[in-house]
Image (cartoon, rainbow, N blue to C red; front, side, top):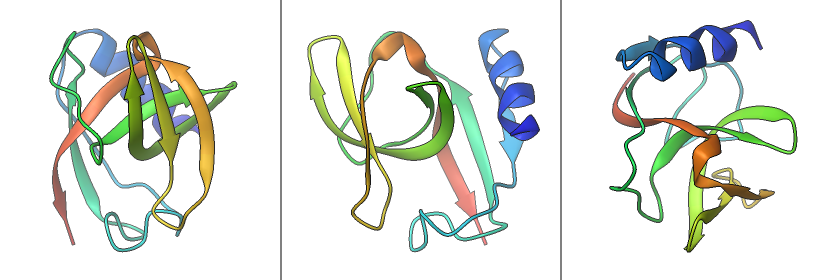
Length: 100
């Protein structure tokens, strides 16, 4: 996913990123080809249901925060699938705007 690598680099540098992800796992929240604006992930301000750019088990996703437990978050898609638990430090950005 070259879009994710580029976005992670910009977010890690403190920059806002606009991406146009492809796929159907987030249909209803982020549809195929929607424009998504991501802000760099600060230390806090994360809640269940937030859309985040995250790395889980070696793969990058634009998926949902399903649960939070101390410094870990459970990540899944909008179709009932779960990616698994990851550390907060693996969240690069949080979606603040989705445009169709």
